[in-house]
Amino acid sequence: MFVVATAGHVDHGKSTLVRALTGMEPDRWAEERRRGMTIDLGFAWTTLPSGGTVAFVDVPGHERFVPNMLAGVGPVPAALIVVAADEGWMPQSAEHLAALDALGVAYGLLAVTRADLADPGPATARARAEIAATSLGAVPAVAVSGLTGAGLPELRSALDRLAARVPAPAVDDPVRLWVDRSFTVRGSGTVVTGTLGGGRLRAGDELEVAGGDEPVRVRGLHSLGEARPEVTAVARVAVNLRGTPRDRLGRGDALLTPGRFHSTDLVDVRLAGDPAADLPATLTLHVGSAAVPVRVRPLGPDTVRLRLARPLPLLVGDRALLRDPGRHHVTGGVRVLDVAPPPLARRGAAAARAQVLAELDGRPDLAGELRRRRLVRAGTLLRMGVPVHTAPVAGDWLADPAHWQRLGEQVTEEVARYAREHPLEPGMPVDALRQRLALPDRVLVEALVRPPLRIHAGRVGTASVDALPEPVARAVQRVRAEYGDRPFRAPEADRLVDLGLGPREIGAAVRAGALLRLADNVVLLPDALDGAVRVLAGLPQPFTLSAARQALDTTRRVAVPLLELLDRRGATRRLPDDARIVVT
Ligand SMILES: Nc1nc2c(ncn2[C@@H]2O[C@H](COP(=O)(O)OP(=O)(O)OP(=O)(O)O)[C@@H](O)[C@H]2O)c(=O)[nH]1
Ligand SMILES: [Mg+2]
Image 1: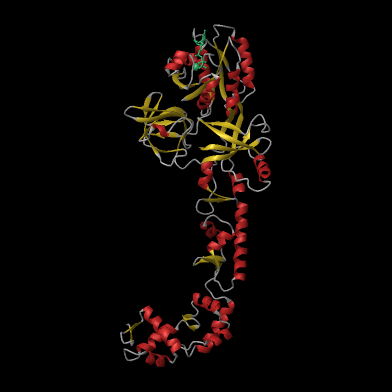
Image 2 (image 1 turned 120 degrees about the horizontal axis):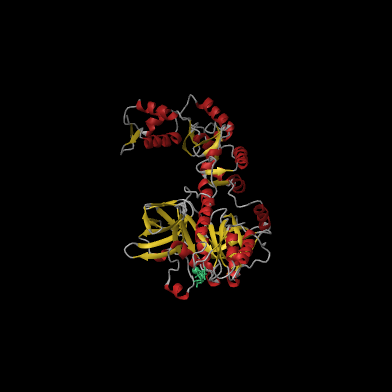
């Protein structure tokens, strides 16, 4: 389907022309028909000579209703500009054309109506000259009369040729349907309509409402007045929503493919046309069918930051326009450069930001986004409208290659520094490393640790992290040499000091499994436990503490905690009379 919006000054014959072409009434309201004036958007369609379908979004020309006009043309890629032969170029001819230009509409056609009332030549010449200076460029012109029907066959053929020029829509894109109407149908519930510019909708689909948290479900679809199981862009579509109250949705809302859009109330944009210098501080941003008040903060010569009064599901590259509602004036077009811009807190941040923005053109650019954001989730970029075609470094994280390499080097440095500062610890805790490098996710740390570093028990160190630090290893060696043949004699406290085994060293040796700690300052070699059980099993059962102490050739200082440890491990059991047995 080819969708085209009308444009043009009030009373120049837009609705008459749509009626003549389609046989349908675009002015839906009794008040419109009574006043002979379009107030809100109208919809009509017909078959073209080629067999294709054209659907019209007929807009009001009166200056009071320009916001309605903008809601209609926002999502539509082509325009039928209507100028009356007898009146010629008028203020809303200019304002509508400025809006189309601001939105970057590139496909159009000029119909000079009321050609039965005056020579269409001068109006045609003026209008073509005005249009040629905009995004529409040189457009074909047809002189018509909605009254006599003269020129209508030529106009139909011209519409066919225009339809053939409009690029094919991206039918696999996610759906962002800007709602231009919502109403209730008795027995069916809430229905919203809009121009589907990309993607496809199916009955049964689950969709998101921008800014809402509960999903909505498509109960049924209509296009051109007929029920359809599926509607593919470009199309006018009416969506019947299951169990959704009508007041939940209205013009300016958007139905979205779930998880594919990022609603934002802060965007950095480039202005087309007039530079930012004398821009009012507050304006209205029109995008899709939405109109939202914004506060304007100039950044560069043609770039500004907009703070939206409510969040919208915007994408990098979106076209929108700014209008001063008080002055009935389209201030200019904007192109969205960044939908998740950094805050401007530091001094000089705005100037630095202006420099960054000067390099951006609104075309989604993966390498540039990675360079600026350094680390970002693939889903985040997709939701900004930036296609992702590189592999993640970890999880769904993407990294700027140079930044990633730097991080790898920093990991080596930080782990080495930590080892120097904490020689007795078996490596740097993963979370300490994550914080040190300001990484947002642990999986990134895990991906950055490469041999000879490795992660063991939540710490990053060399492959031998669970080996003993050098000085502790030497001390343990000496314990082994001195006590190997008296395995149940523990070094006295001052002997431990001589050996260089303070509490931290003992802790490191215990963690590494090189010493067994029975109590503060009471340590044995780790094989002592099995040896003790063997000795105790040789005693007459049950045995007393004193018998155990003698058999083990040790002191109470060792025997008491040793037997308690064996009790805890279930190797021995303590009886009510304090004697023990070895559990076999
Ligand atoms: N003689 C003549 N009158 C026309 C022609 N087209 C429209 N008119 C008349 O011009 C008046 C306005 O026509 P509309 O079609 O309502 O104009 P419009 O552009 O839709 O107006 P708005 O929607 O209010 O902006 C009506 O009285 C029409 O009958 C034409 O080709 N010839
Ligand atoms: Mg009209």
